Length: 347
Image 1 (cartoon, one colour):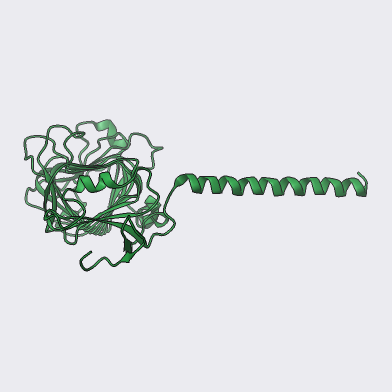
Image 2 (cartoon, rainbow, N blue to C red):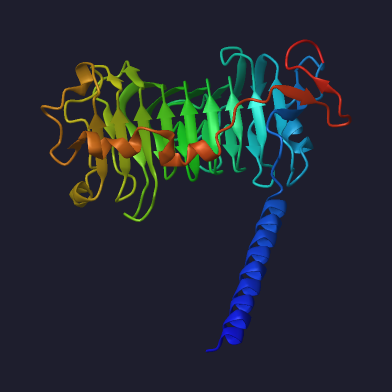
């Protein structure tokens, strides 16, 4: 090939590379535009809920319904103290909502339906990028059947300082990546269950009767799901409580740096009467402490994790959290104007 041909060949390659790069940038721009996500995470549109009538709405569901479908801005629904007797659904087409009280002890969402894990939840979250702060979410159906307080099926969902209470099947951690920080979760039978990929950090887990804390539903070794409890505390009144049993054949649960009271049974884990799951379930403990953390009588198919084995479970990277967990907004505006208001004071 002569010099002139080499120059022409080089120019052709250069043009092709430029075109490919331009098309790639355009594709990224289209993807970013089509995602419709917020560009400013420090400012949110404020909606107030107050039973007194001093807010924008008296019911939480009405406030959620007011958020436009496929919204492209953050919405902050501030729920003033009270007991809200309603069943709430956050639809899949309403992402980027924060539902917040000021204290979980005085901002309570409650219902009393039972018997079915699909229809009984007090709060159902189907949307992505949802955040809840300082709320009590409870189901008061009782002890006779399943009664879900919270169902989470959206991806990239976080709960901060919430109290989640029922008896059987309290928290249906159904699907998606989830983060629970400084939450109190109470129940007796399989009260944290589902197929989510979730990190529970500094949470208080309280068992009110003999049963199992977790029933994780991972079905194959290819699923990147499981529950990790990091720096948590387990207490209770029932005694003879298992750390978990496998709802799915490849169920995966890890407890790390967690205090375990004497309610934890010496065996620690239960195979739910299906011995074949002993070889596929992944149940691990790492540097836990307290009277219930003694592993001398643990079932042989559970694991005492090494430093290397535990490492993937000890950071938010296991849920990709560093890319989607966001701080609370610091500025607020009304949907009908661009006036910025502060989160404190009367609006």
